[in-house]
Image: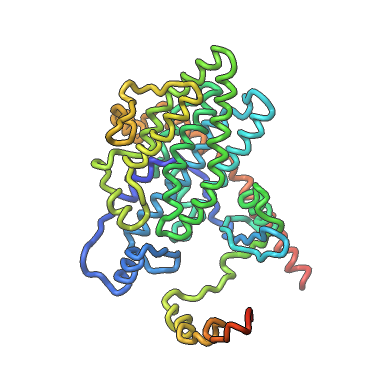
Length: 335
Length: 99
């Protein structure tokens, strides 16, 4: 994953309101289970707002995995060696798999995959904005692995303890595979840093372009994140946006040092008192502009996604026609 | 933007994977597929990319009958007061050793 998108309301989230009071017996049982840090399973009763929040969050998460295949897929045919190509294909295939785990988890809440895909394709549903930026050079692929997947891991690990069972189980699978994504990216960059001045400059350029976008992946500051409190109370979200962002920065600074790149923030420095790195201002206006659809690649990503889906229609039709024919044949043979 | 219909007609399948010879098949997720053969193919690609399994079962989700969570009490609570079904209920002299 890849998600800032989780805290971003979309069409489906607008009507959400939590109605306090008038707690039914079922609601009391639900609240008690949440309070005891128990898990909710698909057939259990749950408040409509909890169900809708999860469908929105898990489907946004799934969309992010699927759209996330595009910026990296762009480099499969241009990978510098057969080894890097094989690694990149495996990684992109993983992202597709992550999307499938997540769509399956969301479907257990009673929303069909066709409905979720329609939401993505019409532009109604959001996905992580990090994929609305272009991948301009090969170092971008390494930086996506190191920083984008690194940020994703920070976000996803607490989701393995999410109160909704199928989501938590999907996240455990995703997290196991995500570690490969980050390490392959970092290692690809290490190799480039041992190369020519030009190659080192490519890595630094990619880091400069992606650093701030990665910090924005954790979502708006806690003070501006109204959905977060309810998500925390329900055990969907476990750690706040700002806290995760801080953890990511603290973990990344030493990695950048080993790699030999600088992070493009003049305010980035160790704060002895806090025991954390201080950092500069994130450009939230630019972030929201991209979320609203005006980033450099929003239109291209969505159009590519829709085209791939439409171009695949004959495959889905053919598979279904074949399955029907086989079934008819079996019935005839049995008769 | 006009889009083709998605997966509406492809039924849902539950996937069970045996991780190692000698162990049981364990539920690991679900997927959509036109028929059983395709479901098996897709389960292989989705759930066993890192040698997670040596055998896969796929079952149409519609074929699964599940107990109702509301019946949890009457189904499972009666077992709670039958502690004599557990070996630890019985006290055996220490000199007997492991039994």
